[in-house]
Image 1: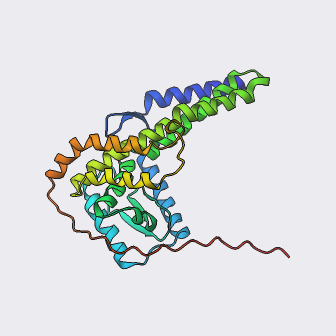
Image 2: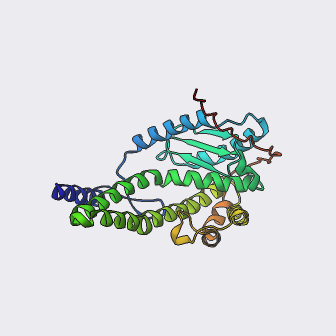
Image 3: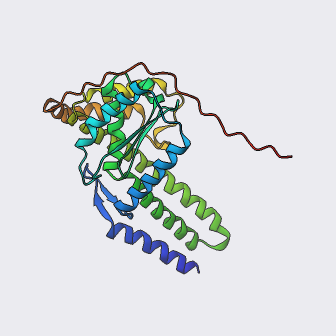
Length: 281
């Protein structure tokens, strides 16, 4: 049985490496095991669940602001990423968060509007999140998880019976530290760069992406060391975004649109109430 498990694990890893290789928008090699249609379906399903679980903002001014920014960005996304009309939803939550999903879905939490000074900074956020979709990071993460599982199975199959638990634990820790975490940081950095270029093409000042992360740095406290984190440090992000302005600023100078999306006064988001536990008689 051990031989069979090991063979399956090795075959999975080799197959993923040799058959499913592609290149990201920044020229980085990727392994993608899922189809775009599958990811689009997963994204749409997740988005529908989110809309059921999190209150949706009914503030007209806030919705107009977010949609205005998104409506300038999404036309500059290739139809290869998504061919259709993007769905944008503003969630009434204090979370400082936003996301984009395969299948043309964008979610913005009202909490993140409290750390964005203007439309340019919101464009940096939406551009970053859409950048994840453009670079197929969801597909890559799922594929990496499949490969990591194969490595862990191989480690357990190769170890003696009394060492199997230790070997599996060590393999799991190693794949997390040396494979999954670095890939997560790579994804974030790549989305930063793609997003900065996307916002510039859409008529938003790319220098706002640097200012945004300076704002975010002021909010962070006690963040883990970068090598143990799924995200690059704020300093790393700020430096890389600043360096990339030499590419993004010429794109901004060549823009053919000038977005006018004034930021409204942002109301305090509603706090979500935890569901009441049923009383047992």
